[in-house]
Image 1 (cartoon, helix red, strand yellow):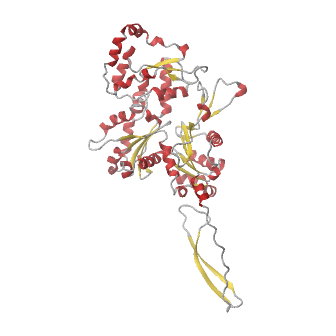
Image 2 (cartoon, one colour; image 1 turned 90 degrees about the horizontal axis):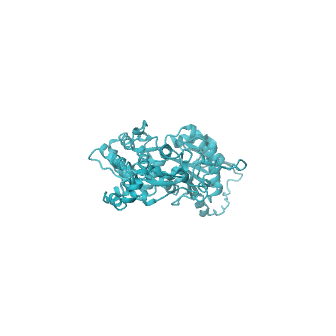
Image 3 (spheres, helix red, strand yellow; image 1 turned 180 degrees about the vertical axis):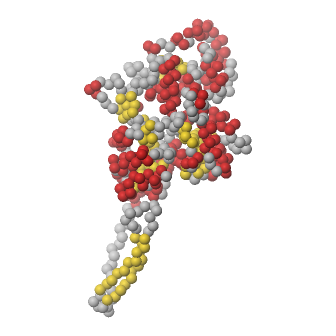
Length: 496
């Protein structure tokens, strides 16, 4: 005789899965043909389940490579670590002095150990956008070969990407990750949300952690962003962009030095070093311009930088660091008459040296002097219009960004301004920004500016913290999803 048995209703996951796909319920019917209904049904004993190997699962979930792919430098390392494995230029270089038979192309970390004189640089990212995917693939491939990192095919990748990325620049990114390097999954994040996450976790009792709201000012290599963040989400409608970054500042410094002293238009890496070691932000520009016109020891800003000669010195250096730091007497509360006292002591020497100050620089010695260039270059960030650029200053960008948000967020945003990016490392940057911002903010609002403990690594550390969270894998786009749905679906997931 025949007997009908309804087993159960089970949940079946569809073949094509996505974040918006609903599960379907299927009623499973089983028909059994029984020749003898009187006999009880005998079930075979199921073998005991094999316990899961938790160690392998933990290993798989912990292999996340965090890659902060900036326009100037790459920060790469393993998620969960405090510091990245390597910080290296995101570029390739070639020396014009190399022989035709040995035209070796220097890649990323090889640039740091070579002679920086007149290196010709090629960068895959221009103005914050990936414009040369092939060059970026070569740089990544070199890093994965030379660094002790997990293999990409058993790892996930957390990648940073600039705000408002175009689809034409984001689609090649997924091809690099999934097709060229065969990563298991990918998560793409913007920089402000990672900075907010790191600062909130670093100071649990601070304003950022309690309100889950902050205004991130990212002064990077290609641009400057003022981005409000609320509950780890960047409010795109409030983001304001300033097309000024470390690259523009270096180019301006090259023009000033080349016009006044010696031609350094081809010395990009050397002038980067000059900018980082000698430039600072002025708190009183008219006063400092008057001091820069003085001669002898009355000029607190005068210092000398020695260029590499390729034989004895392969790197440039500051000739006298104590001389370069004399301007700090204007800000440290020391008496301003101190240079006059020094002049009185050495008046006999200064009387002979003062008239020939500018003529002392000998081009054959590969050195040049800097005076007002030291503070005029960072001044571009606060006064770009004075230098012929049709851009708003940083303080005005912050006010516009805050005014674009809900009025209830205004006092919290002004009280939780976070500075990140390499261009915020200029001395007195935060003090000058507060000085510019205070007159533009209502009197009943507090202005509090916090500089990250390491502005260069702030984004990467936020990504490392996110990669170590237990829910990270659920936020990623897997390689299977990319193969089934293509790069357009992945772009909409992360960039819209």
